[in-house]
Length: 273
Image (tube, rainbow, N blue to C red; front, side, top):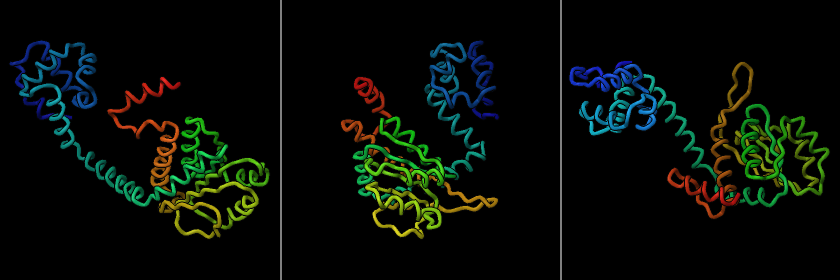
């Protein structure tokens, strides 16, 4: 990929070391976009002062200005960048729609349920299993006792054999709320004190709900080659908000993380360990 900035350089004005820098950047024009000044200089075995002088000889104030100009130029050259930006913007719009529909008081009450329970059983199958596994892994990392139930038949067997005295919450991740699949399971759970929290992709369901907490993420169902699945972006967005609420319970003195807070927060966490 050619860069007009590098192509327009008058080589006769460069020293031998600057020509080496020029040759490297011409061969690897995108290297500067992913590296800071120190990292790129280590890669090229040159001093940062040499790189700064090279940038100034090209008419820039320093490394960052050259980096910015090259990025702008190369992204203008790459037509596929525009397509990537379009796809990302579309995904971001979907995520923002999901965020606008989140019932935060309801998620706070779910957080209360999860924090009070001694164990959380997390269920998922097919594409919903990804969401269940993610939530299970994060909860385990936060030292919550969680048990993953993978597949509907395991869930059904579990409802026949659970300890009714156990203080537990069951979190169901599903694409559909089908009476054919889940009515027997919910009937088995009604005889216990367990709280059922259901996060489902579709709003419409055929299950008669009573004490269950039901959340729908309004994700579009897709049939592809006779396989039924849903994209889970909205579900993962909801899960992430719930995890942030739980995280604040674990570390109540810490606000949600931001880039400039990471260093001090990590130090605080290490002191607690």
